[in-house]
Image (cartoon, rainbow, N blue to C red; front, side, top):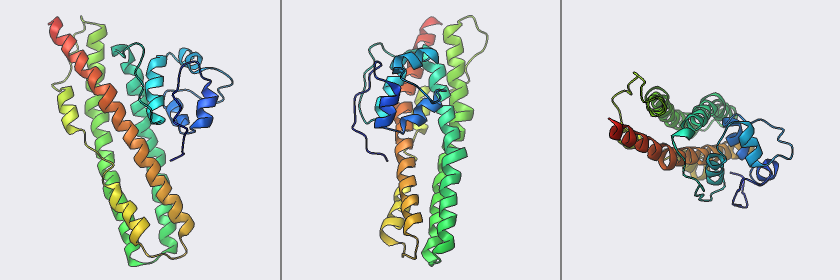
Amino acid sequence: MFQTNNIYITSDLKMSDIIFNNPYLLHLAEHFGMNVPVKDKSVKKLCEENDLNPELFLTFANLYNGVKYTPKDPLTHHDILNIIKYLKNNHKFYTDEIYPNILRTIHQMAEINDHKEMALVPRFFLDYFNEVAEHLEYENKVVHPYVLELYEQRINPTSTRKPQIYSAKEYQEHHSDIEDKLNDLKNLLIKYLPYKDDQILRRKLILKLFDLENDLNIHSQIEELILIPLVSEMESQLNKSK
């Protein structure tokens, strides 16, 4: 993971400056539909151009920087669509880019390192990522549709659409630390797998695994600290209106 200066991001800062400080914010901007070049525009200006609450972007961006940010104005159901947009794009990023990229590096390493322990590397990673994929699929097919139906009812109380029988509590109970299983694989690569002319590929693989772990940790924080409380609030408001 790129070492940032852990700066506290505010809306008046230039988007280019915060990306120079932490290039991983390119992922965040892209998941929200923002593209480079960003010229000399401020965070606030780019958020306005992309119909995005600057406080929502700042909350996410500061998580990427390892800094806790309290929005000046509390996030509300009005932010739900952009939160789901971010999460869906982040899911696609994992399955379409990160997963194939890591697997390709593992296969390249296996061509060089023929020690029997090398067979454990793809096995550990596939076991791990199958669990990740199951988690993402659950969110795509169960959680996100439920949240969007709640949102529809929140903005349109006369809607005849009813949310499926589900709740934020169930979502929270289902939410697990899917990055935990990475430890076995990292330990294998760093401590135990015999070396055989694979240092460059091994280093690349280890760094990619740490990047994935960090991104998944941010993903989980967004769901637990931001999405789940907003869903609970919408449920409470809708129950009061019945």
